[in-house]
Image 1 (spheres, rainbow over the protein chains, first blue to last red):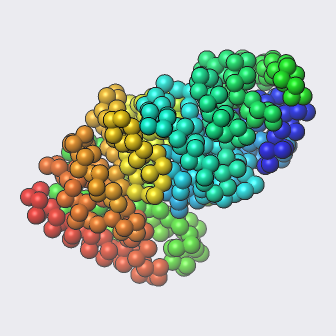
Image 2: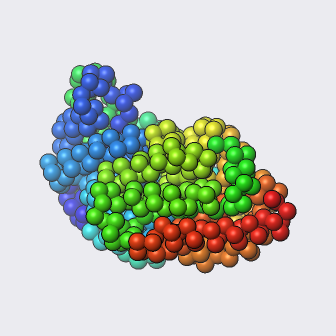
Image 3: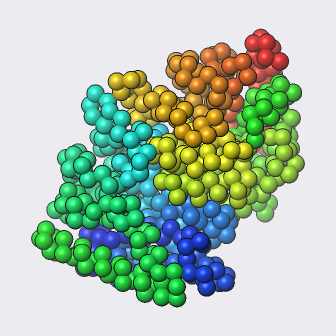
Length: 275
Length: 275
């Protein structure tokens, strides 16, 4: 998917919200557990109720893989449902894959061909040749982990080299990789003190920003520091939206929560003269 | 699986060989493609012919995931076959997973509970809280990426901080994580110049060493620099064994290649007074 399509979607929906479908059977309404495929039933209702207010869905692959073959079936059904009914929506396989070249190639085949996601999150620990097989798909986006929102980000990403922080050196390197224009970057919303510095290195690439809501990031501050003239950010919220209620009104509650965030985003877009 | 069981297996088989089951449909014998599940048929034959000469099988998850639900079925059948017929063998899910805590927990559930692997490879880019959910399973082993054998290892792992290389700082940190005694580490065979330094930091943990053979590492040199008094290493070979022939004799050829490596390992164990 070209970034232009994302930007057009943001402008028409006045939203840069991504909804994370991290479906935990312990958290969804109990009555759904009687259905044949509770994960897909839950997702379908959430997608039906929220698709006008978000521009992307992010499927956290771990939550499907945890159920083996059955989970992969729910995953397939969910991505197919989005692609069929809402082809304008940007889809993210939140898989954090990465391995030596011939193996990354197989992961790319899985998520880009077999499942037909628009993008995948990748883990850059193994460097250039572990990420480039994903970048070969020029009609797709590869979203590289930069600075994550969790505590453990200090154990490696925030180590200091002579040139700066490890994660920033890595982002600098990534600009030299083949097809790097298709890169987006994960930058956690809890790390606003680093975002302006990141923007100097990659002024034009889209950022995928998780951590607003449940993990504690502040929407206004994050946007102020990370937006560019093409908007340039997608903000993810998972638990804060999909578990707004665990009763029969769960889809309606998720919709209301999405609208509430979309309204805040609309205000920010207006104030920044971006719509 | 306790490490004692691995050590006992090494001593009785006089082998510390792990065979990597990275099954590529373009490389397996053509006649297998007519079967209902070519990947499982191939694996079963390889396992039947090589299990006396190796101590571990490593399943590269990407090669299964690339075929979606069908691939996950082949994966399930393969791990179940090993666990049922060769329960002494150490099984490795080469998955390189890692994410924020609640997500890593789901990946751990997938590979340790749903599929019942003895161990999993994990990617430490997100630090302590992304790895500890795997370490909670105290009867399992968590194999953390340290220094990988590919070119891209220089892009991050070999960046220098004030204290040393990034990957070494990370290995030092990992020693402080909860249940760190269950950690093993991936150290590529092409990186012998760093192994002695690594051994000073983690003298006792097992190392999983890929990159002998197809990727260019030398067996004798690697062993000399990495073994400890409990042997302490598992050497992986994938393509160099399983694609020894792509004709009807493929399983026999893989067996012969395994025996040839096992004999070299036996010599090394004898010379080092470890058997």
